[in-house]
Length: 382
Image (cartoon, rainbow, N blue to C red; front, side, top):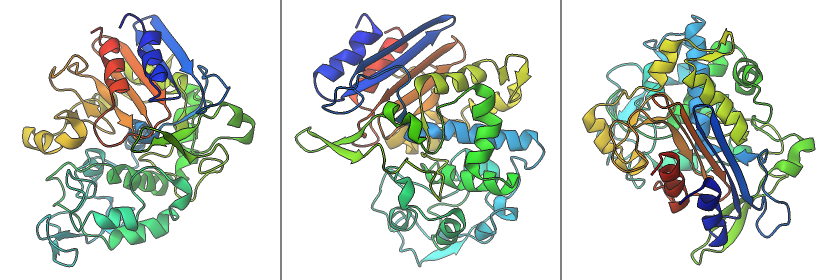
């Protein structure tokens, strides 16, 4: 496809999404396109500053917040997290991944911050959602598509987590999602501030991310997009209204998927990473912290086992890392992630590329939809 607008309009015309906003930067060149409608069947056109539920592209921001605490000297990568999360002081592990939740053995070592950042703490989603130890993640912790107002406050959430066994021993296997929510609680307890307060002060305000947060203020609801799910016939049904789940800060601000944002706000975060942690003359992160975030930390076996979610990509802190060119959109060194509400955000340090696409339809599963793949192909120049 010859232009970003054409890529997005193709999928609006076929009815798969009401609208979308895409941003691609290559060095100093910036291309931003907003197409379609902010609401399904509505008359409000999508705009560059439309606000979206960004779901799992929250994860890189949460990882960056954790790196700030490391740089502050408040915690270290190798530190066991039980000092701040006593609920995880004596975790148990199911004897085998297929074992019942009451057939457990002790963890062989403590869970560390590094385990949480690399998604290898033992909690999270494997390729097989039917395993007994996975069910409580949905029923007790409300993991899955974001529903912020349905989740209990952090202390109660951690108490529930402590009753759920690990699926694997710490450090052994990459498992999706839950570690970012644990990380959000850890950041709050280490910093002594709520996660929304810490991220606003240390990330959003310095970066000028004025539309990013865990709720949408009432005076900005006119820019808040709809959120939909396609039924078996492809018809869109509303998942959340503008005055619904994101109309107030939730009791449990999810570090895994709770943020709302815009393409320009997420782009400001990406540009900071491309500048090795700098914003003008101010350093929010050191180059070494950025390098650790954007470097693959998985073994080849762990990458292979994570294929349902990452398609064989590696994992840094809070996002995937392409380790080889597998397809036109897989560029070695590309860092970022996708969100289950129809969002994607990546950067390529080697080329100075940022590629962000925000839409409003929930993903049907871990496999990225055609819209995302077409967008990535365009962003990669393919």
